[in-house]
Every structure is written in structure tokens, then in C-alpha cells.
Amino acid sequence: SFVKQILPTWPDYVLKDWVYNHMRAPMLSGDVHNINKEYILELIGDLKPDTRWAYNPRQPFTMDMFEPRTKLKLEQRAGGKPPVGFTVPDDAARHATQAAFAKKQGGIRSEPVILVKRNDGYELLEGWHRTIQHFASYPDGYYGPAYIAIVQ
Image 1 (cartoon, rainbow, N blue to C red):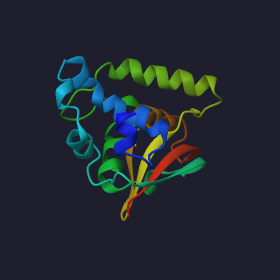
Image 2 (cartoon, rainbow, N blue to C red):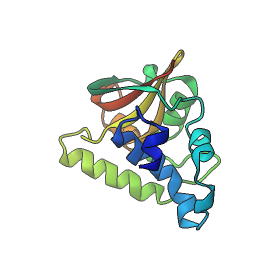
Image 3 (cartoon, rainbow, N blue to C red):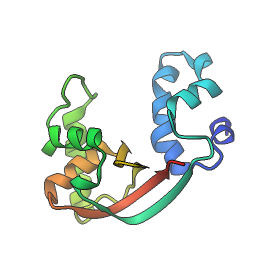
Image 4 (cartoon, rainbow, N blue to C red):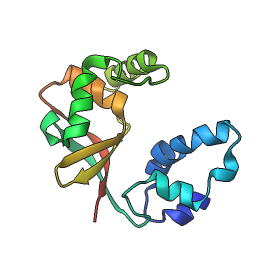
């Protein structure tokens, strides 16, 4: 695909769950002519087209593992509280859905979250609702699946 040519080392799951989801807004608004290589490179920020990724089916999760901004957001949203200063579409319903899926799947979702390993901890890119619900059930930590970008 067009995106895979720009991000050749990125796992298909990460492309589907994070990159394509962030392309949805311009596509829905009919602004598709702005989805080009520059748009994709701006979207991925300081990550690179050849970023290396690792998949860990049993990544240990604790609040202390996260970089300060991610940790603060997770703490502010503990249990599913709305985010401070902005709205997330269907936020409460998405929390309820993730909690129900986790319960059905034995407590932890089988769907991976997407992390970036930074010098000061892990940044959570995608999987906020899942992660918040997991910490509501397992405040001391848990093991779950994750794709992890290794920043070079």
C-alpha cells in the first residue's frame, strides 16, 4: 500500500491501529488530497520511516514504566474519567466496551497497545482506553501484549 511504501518496517497492526486511524478524519472530511508522504511523516512525529518495532506478548505494565506525560494522563483518567481540557468522542462508551472485552478475555485484552520506548519511559501511542481499564482492574500492574517502537 501507499503507506507501507513510506513506512516499510512498520508492522501491519501498527499501520492499521494507529496510522490509518489518524488518517480517518481527513478522509471522512473529503480532504484526501492532503494525505501524502509529508502528511504521513508529520503524523509519525519523531519516529522514522525505518523505525524498528518489537512485539512483546507479555509486556509488563506498571504506572512507573511510563514517561511523565503519559503517566500524568493515565493518572488523570484513572478508571475512565474524561480527559482534562479536550473531548474524546464516545469516551464513556469506549471505556465500557474495553472493560467488557477485557472481562470476556480473562481480564486483559488480547489486542496489543502501541508504545514508544523513550529515554524517560514508555509513551503510550494507542490503546488508552484498554490501558486505563486494565489499570482499573490491576492497579499494581499486569502483563499484556504490546508493539514497541525503539527510537534510534
